[in-house]
Length: 198
Length: 198
Image (cartoon, rainbow over all chains, first blue to last red; front, top):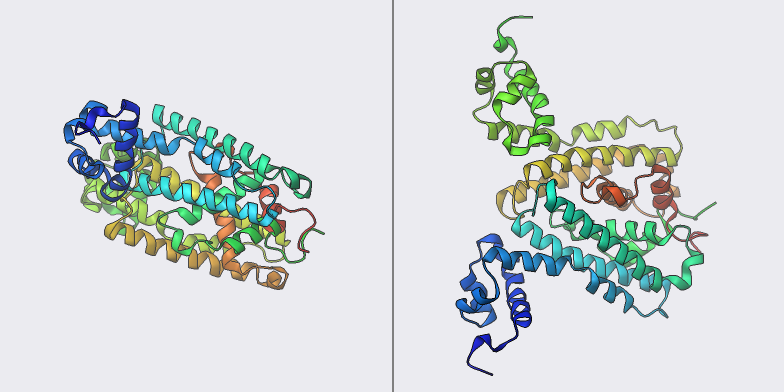
């Protein structure tokens, strides 16, 4: 290890700082100090300010990292297509649940990035549209072999799974939400009515 | 009509002010002025300050009004029990959708009442538990005749319907959510798999 903290390339340095900041932001919200982030990353505070102009920029970079849905698509695509439909649906639900937990924990710790209006809200909507398109595409590949067994299109199926995952991940709702994978998968596939479609 | 605005009993006066404040808070958020609220209510600004100590108190009263789930229970109980199961499920979804739209529009306009911690968050969790108990009880009565046709308990059924209603009502998600009642009811009752339970 070099004794000079700035020996890392800038991109890696920024990644390292975001890695250290994420759990601290979740715990302390905007009250976190760059001193705490530097300590957690094992670097000097000055090194942070060579990679980021301000604490606000670190927060932005952390939100951008979480908003990047490509990792999510990769995780879904990594599901073994030879597993049963139930197992694949359950795995997708778990991936979405984990992601919503990560994002919601940070959003609740930081307060909302915007008030539902203006440029920030438009950006949020675009990110969400990207997120949804990516999830539907990846799930479409993972579930392709069973497409004919489904009564609904992949998009509707993903909206249903996503709604249940979001409710289960929400800090205010999670205690009472459906969090048992077998129950969720059964509801998603078979619905609430015994006996099925007539 | 008396020319004296304070001729109303205090409770009615407060209700009148909250009625006037609700749409203004949704539009302007915390930037709304007591002047605007007074104008909308057709009363003098001084009359507001005989009913409420501050704008913050009006906001609190508005949130408390929305958080009062008893109206929600009454609306669900008013559903005609002789209608088909599909129609009753659809009606419950509509009631929850409308309520989430009201609450989320205000929460997004005001910013979150808390950061997921502390007394405000505990209060929010208690309110949510009340809300859930009330919805499950009311829905239990409205769906009682069909209980044996259901493969899941009323609580799980309500969590499913609520998750879909919340996603459809969310300001950031509603454009792409499932908002067609027939599609929602079909998914809720029959699930995503063609052919039903084996």
